Length: 358
Ligand code: NAD
Ligand code: DAU
Figure 1 (cartoon, rainbow, N blue to C red):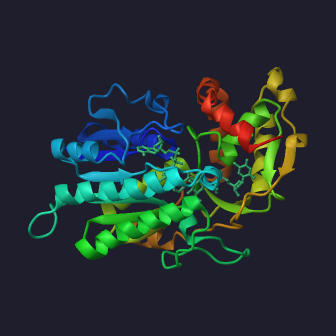
Figure 2: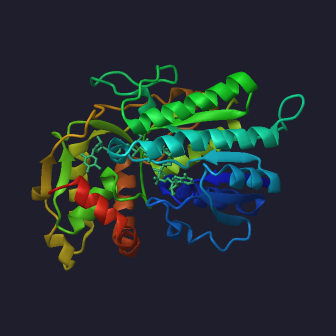
Figure 3: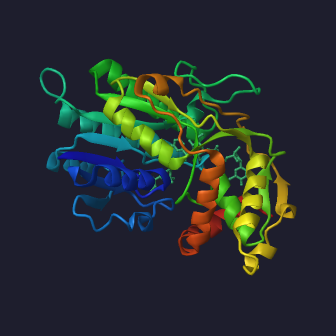
């Protein structure tokens, strides 16, 4: 039975990935989920799998050397899928240090533990794979409406978040180049879907609109992101772990570029379409809520991935059309009001009040 170590599995993409993996492989695999449970980690996401006897959770900080070494010593880990990170650009602009701690030092700690556990006199134990889940933001910003990020595009991160992710990628690359460490890096575009924390554009706008609160659009809302449904990302990571070539980088993207203002408008229209006429929240949702606010510092203009290599080498391509994925996502938030209530208590409220003075 193959054992997966998933880091950051209580976060948005990590929890969607675990649910997908256990659904796909059922009892043929064992999943160990480790997460520090920061403000972004929520075990409620994993309710559907928490009772399975081939799933276990440990509250561990990836920077904790002792705990990570113990985990490798006590378990025959075959796959490391490394999601754990501080993931929000705006928070990184306000408080960069924790991004370096978790994203850089946490990554080297995992690399060292996996290398020690997997290395033999001649090479590594067979069939071990480490996946570094990275981001298209490491490539920086496309400054006009043409062109794409390729795996060969030079790294040029701008925010403290993307700089910390690029640093982690370079450490992984150095372990591949120096020690022939069996790793692969994936670099994905913006994800959306269930369980995303409402500090990020799509769930923040859904949550605010339903409460009749202003919708804070940075600058003029003209920045472009390439949106991918989270399940498509989960499928890509699984395929890369099984069929990807060790030492390679794979870009993962949706070929679904949209300006932020377009996304916000689609959310409002979809909410108005989905909310029943007698739902009191329907009267609160309106395009008039859109409020242009001060731009993000160093705001990257456009991200766009060319997912040609992953299509050619391992036959992955995005499956979920945006109009379906966004409808499903909005339905999920409408049906899971309690989830939203739980995650927006306490620390989030404090963050929101500091961040948006509107
Ligand atoms: P998230 O913020 O929702 O989840 C991150 C998880 O990591 C949380 O559960 C948190 O508790 C955990 N964590 C944070 N610090 C930790 C530490 N020191 N030790 C252990 N656990 C810790 O993030 P996400 O959006 O799910 O992103 C997951 C990964 O995917 C990140 O590495 C991110 O850079 C990458 N990524 C995200 C996107 C996106 O659009 N969200 C796109 C491409 C790549
Ligand atoms: O591209 C992949 C990256 O996508 C991931 O690596 C990051 O972890 C993830 O957070 C995401 O980064 P972005 O900065 O692109 O996502 P965010 O949802 O924060 O913002 C999306 C766009 O919307 C961006 O141009 C800023 C804008 N925005 C965001 C918020 C939260 C607004 O206009 N208003 C807002 O309130």
